[in-house]
Image (cartoon, rainbow, N blue to C red; front, side, top):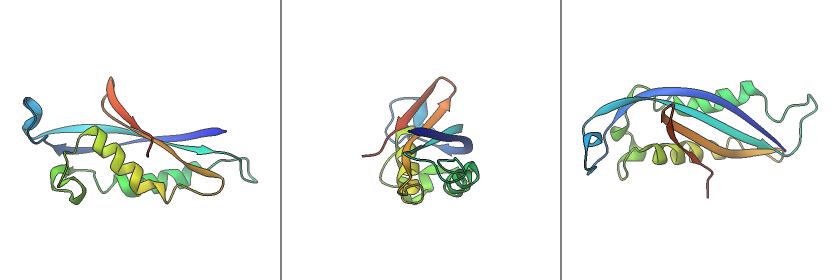
Length: 123
């Protein structure tokens, strides 16, 4: 098996509703995102998935969050736009476009800082 990944990022604002502290106030982050696809076999060129394809699919979804107030995004109306929920959102959006007979979406990592983040593996 091969784990193929790309890293990207997006900037956005949010606040955590009912949070007992500073994060309840509007603030922003430069979220770092790592998307990993697990390939069970390689194609005729020796690739699990072309990095170009992986980047295109991921960027199409991440761009929807970039420079936005995430609390206004339809997917975060009923839940806080926490790193956990953002990772799950990205995973759900990417799962169908990053799954074939040869490979499948394995995980989405979202980090608010270099030292704190979350990895979502799906259900």
